[in-house]
Each structure stands twice: as structure tokens, then as C-alpha cells.
Length: 166
Image 1 (spheres, rainbow, N blue to C red):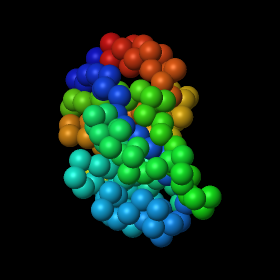
Image 2 (image 1 turned 180 degrees about the vertical axis):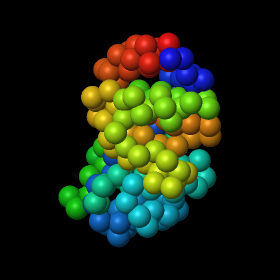
Image 3 (image 1 turned 90 degrees about the horizontal axis):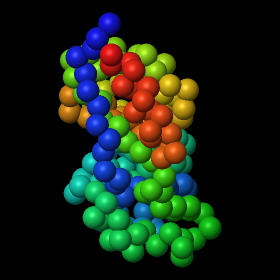
Image 4 (image 1 turned 45 degrees about the vertical axis):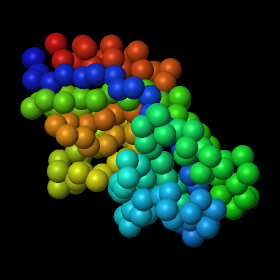
């Protein structure tokens, strides 16, 4: 069966793994750098070109265009952070594939066990799951989904998607 869907590998973006209590992170980083913390688990909030994804208890991913990486690194101060928070730059560790098209839900269902219906996975949803057996971060985008996997699995995911779209 052929699907009305396509995928493309996105450029690397700036990404920081943040761990710790919200108050401790705001105290260290400053509220002006961070978007509001998402109130619910597996949700994201966006402001000023920065996305803050709540991916677990006391665990967030801060993402922005790669041209802001140095600016964010300076503002976050990962190497000087106090012991109650952890800030790690992980920009080059993930490959993101954007999958779009009218059949995108069918394509993702082949490799992902999540219920991605809009009622269960709204526009601001983000979650770690599996994609073709590998750990993946899934989030909605206009017309489809962005799926991020460990960088070393990027080519393999492209191969699997090419086969799934035939």
C-alpha cells in the first residue's frame, strides 16, 4: 500500500537537557530566558523562538534554532550550574525527521505505539516513545509530526520510512 506522506531530515537545532525543580531552574537561569513551564506532563510551551518540553518529572528539553545555541549556552551556564540542577547541551545527539501528508498518522502507526489522535496527542503534546524499536521524541508540527531519534539511528530511520512509504 502506498501512502500520501513524505519525510525530510531537519537541520540540527539547539537542544539542552534540563533537570531539577522548576524553582531551582528559574532561580539559576532566570525567568526571562525560559518560556513558561508547561503545566502538564508531555506538553511544550513556546515563547520567543524557544520551546520548553516537559518530558518527565523534573525533566525538560529546551530547544531553539541552532543559531541561538551560543546565546542559550551562555544564559544557561551548564558548567557552572549548582548541584540541584543539571543542564547538558545535547544539540548534536539527535536527528529529527519531519513526516507530513494526509496519511501521516497511518505511517507513524507502523512504527510508533502512541495514540497520536488529536484528542490524545494535541498540538502542544510531546513525548518519548519508540519509533521502529528505537527511543524517539515525537511532537506535532504543521501537517504532521517531528520524530527525533539518537543521531546514530538517523540513517536507519530514513531507510525504514522510505520502505514504509512504498
